Length: 162
Ligand SMILES: [Zn+2]
Image (tube, rainbow, N blue to C red; front, side, top):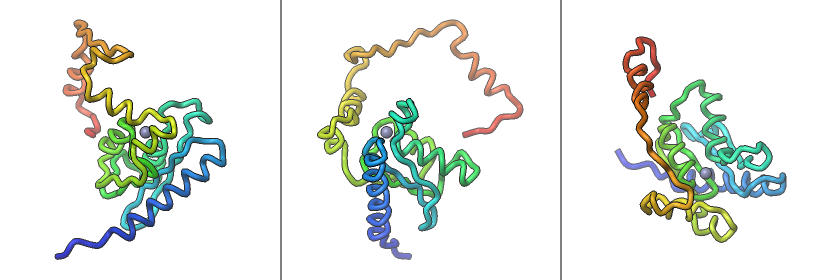
């Protein structure tokens, strides 16, 4: 069995994501678009809605993942590809991993985003530094009940693993 030539399809879906991103700027949103594709067909799209929804997590990829899950009626996007107009930020990269997408494909990169004033590259840089050096402290305080939610989870007879 030979590997399928996906180059052309990838470029086509990336162009779709980029077009969504450009149109979103005209609509008053951020310059980011994303598409979730399964078996060569579009499942759902997303555009950046941070300022319009007053939601700092309303990134294009997150919006596309949420929409695709609603369309497919599942919390797992295994078997899909996430296309993004720009390299996913750490939030969206991890969202894609949580969604279990098969692949993530992007067009512009974190350096393009940084040149336009977005923090993607800065956040990737932070993740490579000791948290003690971060301007916004992340503090672990292991209070006595810290493990209780996981004890409850493991004891729950009806639970949906994910
Ligand atoms: Zn993002």
